[in-house]
Length: 270
Image (cartoon, rainbow, N blue to C red):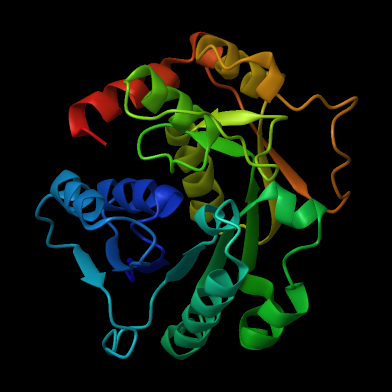
């Protein structure tokens, strides 16, 4: 059985949690890291992973992955979007895609993890992806995500800023116009959804969302984010009809994930 997986962005927010989830399932992970975080944060994440014979970290795209072609390739582009550094994102995006083309085998499946805003605003170029992986046209999966919160959420997100502010480690709250305020899901529920889609061998376009409405606002209220920072929308954004919907039934009415996020900040001294 081929259980090898490459994760581009394996130390980024979603990619890191996905790495942990796949390792727990017994997969062999090759993690290609980006340079989007400080060295101390990288070291803390390495410590959290611990020693694992099934985990290999790569920081040089020139190095070969070996003779065995991966069963699956994941790209975590989710964490790049909110940074709004277009030039840097395009450079990293181009390098990852080019490297993955040479790493992928004929049977390799490919999944891109993206914020739902990129689908609604047509920010992602599908033709470019399909051209790059034209031999895998029926094995490409796009998974679009709303706001994801929890441990290791980047500081660009409002919830992390609010958690840091409560820990007296940050000042003014700044909510990016790119942050999705119509839904929010705890990262562990998100990873379960991604793994479910992955293990079923699903392709096509997916949108992961909460069955609970107004979860972003609910968490924002719990964190005492002032109403002046919250962007009001008259109606839910219209989603493209071709999206498959994966709904999560969570027990997050009490926002246990937010509590874990705050505890994580204190424990790691982020």
